[in-house]
Image (cartoon, rainbow, N blue to C red; front, side, top):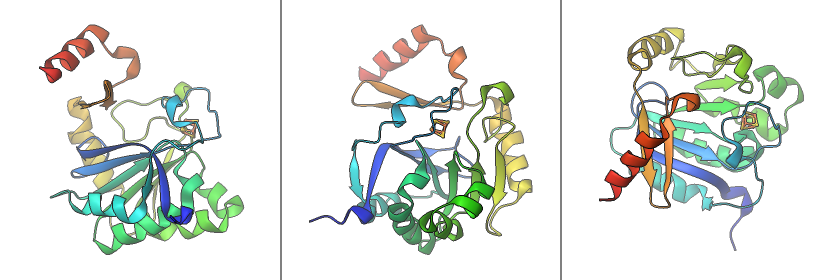
Length: 211
Ligand code: SF4
């Protein structure tokens, strides 16, 4: 029988991205969020029911098979709803020398003052915490964070604001975009404001991908 503390409920994974932080990174979106932020751009990640349950050891095997990645970026959904299993995974990621960027709708202060023991104990496995929920009113362009109310919290010595500024002023300022197509007729767009997506272009890209 599988131990649920070692299972992660996943919305989506992406192998190689340059739009999720410094270097080439794997992207993992976890399933489930209860915050209901009005401007959420990922509403299909909210449902708490099982979508894709994966053992943390299997997810790590997949991660470690990706050649040349600098680290993983975890988003959601609310990753900290699965703090215990996520810590199991991130322990292996950290031991492998990969870096970790994690988005959460909670603030760092929320976690420290009101978070569960599991949410507090995951912090040493994170290099950059991007905290706070997305707020469209304070949206920013060409930044790793989506809105001004969010913060980069550097929880290790691996990165600093210098790395983030360099990354944002190079890759993101070039207005680069990534589109990942999956076999179930869905496309994931990273680095692109959803309001500006040309649906005809998307359809053409998707169809050409299937040829
Ligand atoms: S915390 Fe994130 S995933 Fe959850 S509703 Fe807010 S913006 Fe969406």
